[in-house]
Image (cartoon, rainbow, N blue to C red; front, side, top):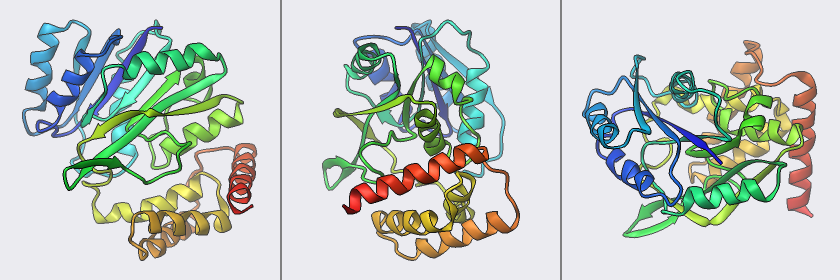
Amino acid sequence: MRYYIIAPAYNEEAFIQLTLDSLVNQTVLPSKLIIVNDNSTDKTAEIVSSYAQKHPWIQLANKTSENIHLPGSKVIQAFQKGFETLDENYDLIVKIDSDLIFPTNYFETIIKHFQSDERIGMVGGFCYIEKNGNWILENLTDKDHIRGALKAYRAATFKQIGGLKPAMGWDTVDELLCKYYNWKVVTDESLHVKHLKPTGANYNKTARYKQGEAFYTLGYGFFITAIASAKLAMMKKKPLLFLDYIQGFWKAKTSKKPMLVNPEQAKFIRNYRLQKMKEKLF
């Protein structure tokens, strides 16, 4: 299976060489790797260019944008810039962050999953962060969720869900729409990926309301948003974030922010979320 990777990058000179080394050493190489340099002010572009000279399948794309790091929109706009440079001669499309170290068999294993069942639409491993000299699971989500840092999609699935949405919640709505269209989402706990920069490390203060806004645009409704907000705030060990998330939800609702899903999809999502909650309770 041919796979293309798109990796948005903003000021990643400290990490991107490690990411590129881990991709160059894969047992099954990508057919194309597009690194989208999103207005970096460091040596990110120079490092990528040096790899592109040695490996013809690596390409650098440059994008100009604001330096405000808001979750969702900026990274997916950069992803889209890279996607526009590609042809359609791929079986899998992959979005990764530029601060990851992949095990050498990562993409070989991902491909095997897709080949095992034609209804598998998305596959991913797990992110680990360094803490006190040990690599531990970056435990921000359920084990059946693929982190936004390392998403792999079947081409047909990617097209059916409408690609990636440039808004916070993009890495949740993609999976929910997968399930809506009856595709399977697979996570592989044997694939440990080193995440060199913890999630959200660069978010500014305005980003804290974005999570609640995302819950609204996903069609969660207030009840599910309240439960999801409490859970996420506790997982992040910052209980007061709950208030920020709820405030973000009401801001989005009162301003009638555009939804990421249509009414039928929103109804499916609410039912799906409620079912998952019942399974955990009982």
